[in-house]
Amino acid sequence: MATDLEKLAHNLEKLEKLRKRTRNAYISVVIYFIFLGFVFFLLSRNRYLFAYSHFQYLFFILLGPFTAEMFIMCKRIRREYKKLYNAVIVRSSLEQYFEIESFNSDYGIPEHDIKATGMIRTGNSFKADDYLKGKYKDVAFMQSDVLMEDRTSITPYIKSKPVTYFRGRWMIFEFNKRFKCNLKIYENTFVLSNTKFSLFSSDGYQKVEFENAEFNKHFNCYTDNQTEAFYLLTPHLIESIEDIRKNTNGGLLMCFKNNLLHVGVNCGRWAFEPPIFSKIDIAEIQVAIRQDINLITKFVDVLSLDENVYRID
Image (tube, rainbow, N blue to C red; front, side):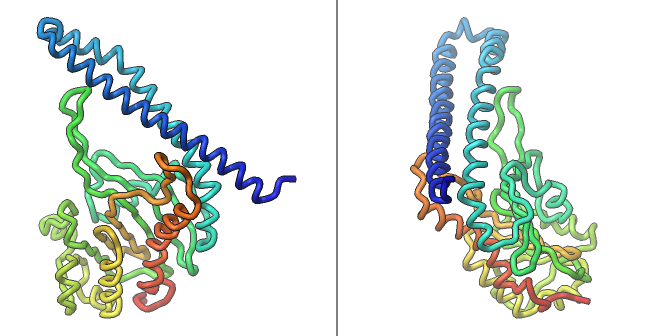
């Protein structure tokens, strides 16, 4: 019967093969588009041939299925690699910190859960994956990678550069009691968030400032109950949020609503991602995974979410 070390060695060998297949698939797509661009350039130089719009459409129609197949193949290989990477390497690290209820790279936090906070525009293109649900210090949470963008088409085949509202980690922490107010906190780096006064006024939200000048300098806060907001956001909690801001790479969004705390970190990167263009190095990977884990645990630890310090009866 194979030992745990033998199983790990076998899985690592399989992972490395999948990594190389994924890398080669990515390189093939890049080479294909370089070739396609070169062909398109040569054809466009022939004004008589390319002047006919029906030829342009025929050109794209013939290449369309092949292009789609390349993307599907690349996505399929990467998915296989990602799932094995999560099962062999990531999950064992997560289990050292969390009681895991669910961990799946195929989906993430639903769009309607984020949209319900009214914190940020979700755009017309929403993507979420690496869903993790579990408990840390008896605090239930879920988290995933999230990308929210607006994409528009210039032609049926060409899309304009997307407007990105959010790219990073979204976390939801659960509490046992409900707050008497809803409170939304934006780090002032968020220029595309839903912070228009007209919008909040219609929902009963008003801007509120606290006695901590440094906090007011870095964050904009909106609430539907200013009196209760001062009870909720205690001086200690304000200082804790400031500490997190200083030690977090990415703009912060925080929403206290009912018995949930939503936290968005607009860090511009995904968590628990496997290497593609470099060989698998277990030591380096474990350091990166611990950093991704720490982004979850720091909100529970620094904000003392496992205590009753800011629950309102």
